[in-house]
Length: 331
Image (cartoon, rainbow, N blue to C red; front, side, top):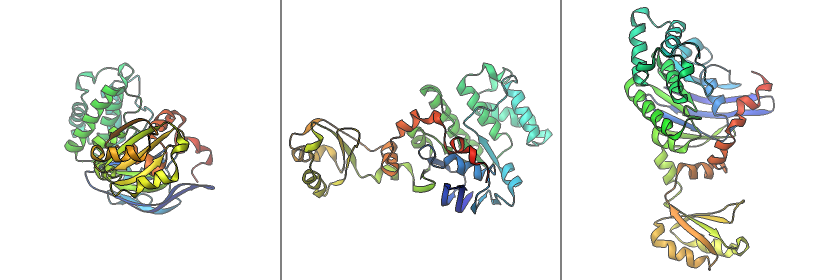
């Protein structure tokens, strides 16, 4: 459904997208993850024909993003991070206005509006002003609006940002349903790892404009190897090179990582419960606390980007690449 080949976007001396090649399949939920400023929003804006690439090419639904931009736009729906529905209009009025803008045929207009309202669970609130909607309801309305003209591809940029956990889970169910009912290809950006794990068929991790990992959530987690033993140290200085090398010498150990900011060591192992005594003996009584668990997508994110996703969520209000480098213009 989407083919990207050698795509580059530069802003003067800054490279936002660095020679990206990628294929996204029909009826796939594809997650695009990365730190703030990594290029996620820039890539979506290029695919949505909102900005032009510096070089390379891409097709969406078979249409070239530069030569056939109007056909690309008629093939896509997009839900931005910032709310864009009209507060003073009702949910129904917002959708009807959008149906005119996208030339939804008159004979099918009411049927289509009613269908997308039902799909996102807003039929009973369609005649209420949007300013009276909750945050979750408003996001669902904007998804409905993005679906109204039967797009082949829909882009969701942080669809649950700012929602409480209950509203977020409700939104996941609606997104999962719309992919099945509408048979669309969905490209999702998110800072919530559990969201990507629940919704996505595949995930691409982007960092400094490059795709640095690409696989299903389960295979990305498996790539870390087995389970993770987290050990809080009594004294970081006592964790010598010899101790680390001893740990790495065991066949069941896949990796040892030290946390630069905390007295913590992460050890990636097979069958943690079985091999924990061996690990503890190797640490030579330099253990303050220990626990083990299965790898998460957050661990994958940390491995590939060197940054913790929770810190990214806290800093998210600072904005991404497009916000912080807007002064460079559309060059």
